[in-house]
Image (cartoon, rainbow, N blue to C red; front, side, top):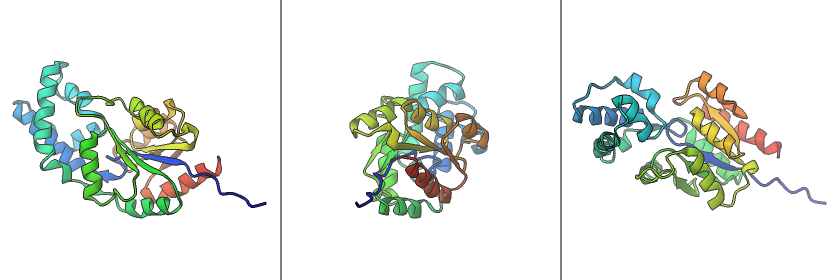
Length: 226
């Protein structure tokens, strides 16, 4: 009797802090928005902790106000710079293309599932030539639909008819891990992005990886546990 290879796990990759480092473009675009509003703005190092969450979460904290109109104005100023300049002030982490190639060669279905709006995430993935690895790019709409990552993960699982137990959410922030766990997926937290080791550890992912090269072995271990 022939031993059939296990069906590969579906892999959901976060974008910012997992596949690429967008800190230059995001922080400068946030500073631009605050400057346009006549507000003081923090330096790049302080703003890095806001990379990952949706802008409708970030700006109320930076502005110290929950004024919806003010937040939307800030987002407009942010996008004014980001969609023309900041989008490509971005670098793919070393080892990521090789990782994706290895996973694709092994037959793993790969998806981008990110908190960055799809319209931007798709352009970034194509700009760096990573689109050849992914079946689809999923993110929120510009109007805020799917800003909550738990809802986005749930949507993708349903749309692609994926079994959560055979799916892995891979990301660098606690919300990535939590969005996967709340939907019943396996999870891999990475610490080379914008979430601290303490943040990732506290989120209790199934695996923790400190560099891109550790992700492939982690995925293989999860595959063997099917």
